[in-house]
Image (tube, rainbow, N blue to C red; front, side):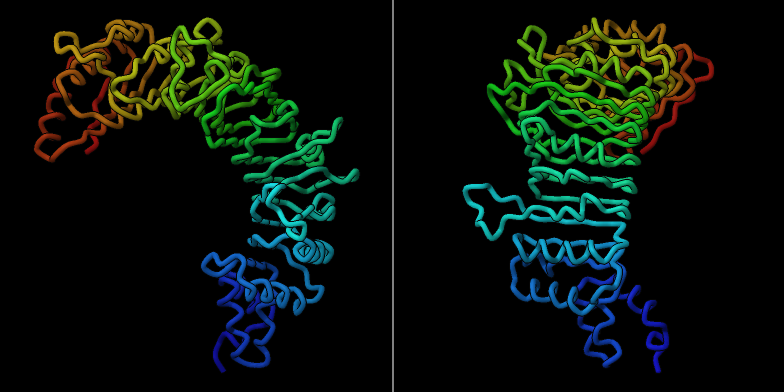
Length: 451
């Protein structure tokens, strides 16, 4: 007898749970004992083989697995299938009624109302929103019209919503009701909800939330009022926010914020075409209250150029970021750093500045003036407390070398300049040699070159 066959049934079922459904089902031919073992795993990942989501064989396999497993508890259940309607709802209700589900991952495609067959319409079973054991819930490709009156997810800690549409009744916001049903929620992920199209005000309110992630698709639009957003999340420590900036932020309660990653874009004349807002444009987005609500942040990562430029466009509203210790910006050489200047002037305790991208050169290019007017010869660095500067994309041109000379001569508290050099090995050696020869205002400053 082989060693695996000598293991208890529940151990074998657990091992089979790590295999794709089709592979684990193939073990049923080994012997009578193995015939149904794959169906009794506490983890069922019902994913279509090679993405053939409508293949009848896959649907029959799902029904066979659920039938054979009887009333055995399923702790983790994953279903990916474009087939919706009454039969799918029965599958979900069967799984939930067994009790003990802690992890539920459902991935279904959204159908437009005018193209959707009546048999393909799916309202999620009420049992999902009243489950007392559910800890992690992932929904992809759903339209949630309303929640049951007794909606309650008392154990839910992680909620992932991807391409989920929320329709609200006249006096009830389904999204708000869902959040209020999760009293211990710690992580919320909102992907591609198109919530700029929601008719009701967008509000993320949760007293227990620790991590909030919002990511939009950034489709072009014209003549759209982005409305208002509220973040009433006093315990959030980590924010990953990639979205359009709305007309206003009504409430921003991010008092516990430690780390923020921002990729934000502004609308101009209630439109967006992929371009960046500029000084003098009719900007119809306003990040002012977001800045103020983030005043306690310790780590800030600006993932796009426009997020940095917002601090210039709204420079009169920037709060003092007393707790900000680490700042990272993304750059391209031809875009001005006015936003960085405004931001650094309001960061009295900043310790680390990371520049992800090239240093900024003048535009249009002028070989007689290799430092752009926007940084005023880097004079703003004279009072900057930064101790560490990291540059991830250094080409070693004359202009870049001159700018690094300005930086080193201005930062009197600098302890480390870390530079990633690009080019051939011979070129990197000469560029590194040139760097090490630059004068420094700080006697403690060391230059670390990374090839």
